[in-house]
Length: 235
Ligand code: BJW
Image (cartoon, rainbow, N blue to C red):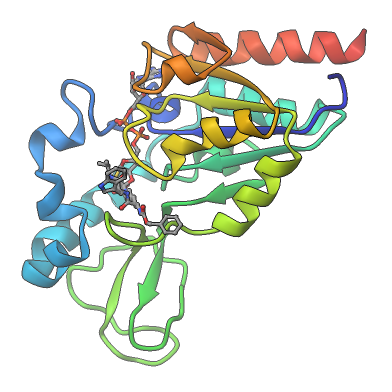
């Protein structure tokens, strides 16, 4: 196992201690906003201002947040582990990258990209979209957040399944296991022979699919697991 390939799936729980709201926890985003009002293509068509304001507010907020010990530990694992480490994140924040991770796939898109539905450009975007700014490529005022809503196809799926096929270990961190296809990765990895580990505040919906589960705050359980792995690799 010391040179094993590791696929790490992260969710909102990994960024919770950086002050970024999760979705389904008490006080989470879905307590204040109905999913179908802000996170579906139909919602955007029905009330674009509501959706753009929701994402403008979150885009602004994440830029003031900092990576936490869990993000830094995963970046350290990526640097020091003798095998491949791939981070597949459902999060649209950039905290893995700001902690120094380089191999990160954002399957639900990124806050700091806009998507022009007229010319398909995906320019980096740090400001608001509510004022319908023009696309820097084509000039049309058709920008939306570059995120994956319910009913849309998540990004990078071919690369993710290729990595799962090569993985010896699959680790799921800070995700409720409520949203597919990410919630199904543990079964794919397991069927392909990988060891599976859950690190989450509490048992997720899919906890029984994992070989092992450790529960606690990500800033504690993730650094402890990374140190354990690196100690093993050095043996
Ligand atoms: C901590 C912690 C701490 C807290 N430390 N831990 C019926 C059956 C199966 C599937 C479907 C179905 N009906 C419809 C579907 C499909 C649908 C789906 O899954 N629906 C479910 C509700 C059932 N999925 C889709 O539509 C997806 N597309 C799709 O399936 O296309 C078909 C296709 C797939 C593949 C190939 C080809 C075709 C798209 C899903 C898009 C999800 N989008 C969102 C919004 C993104 C933009 C944004 O951020 O606004 O993604 S919804 C939201 O949920 C967001 C998240 O990435 C995602 C997952 O949430 P996450 O990360 O798990 O957060 P929480 O809040 O749920 O959980 C946090 C966890 O952390 C908790 O467990 C806490 O305990 C823990 N925690 N603090 C450690 N300090």
